[in-house]
Image (cartoon, one colour):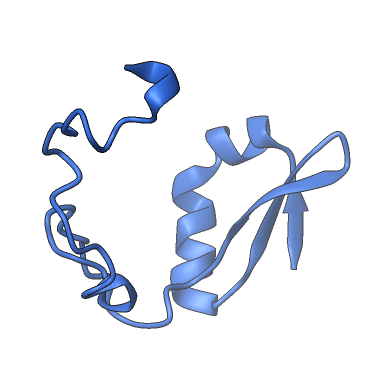
Length: 80
């Protein structure tokens, strides 16, 4: 595992990406000696997430439209 600072990562990003892609190297980016981020090969194809699709673990748990305004009865009495 290669440890570098953010400035070096910024300067050498294309070369670092080549190390990750071609040799499977993992690069730890550290600020003041403390790990901040890790650059490593993707485990599979990266699929972009559609922000409008419901997360499978949350499916069916939200039983209302959260963008719909609340009625007077839904507001706490202290806020009416």
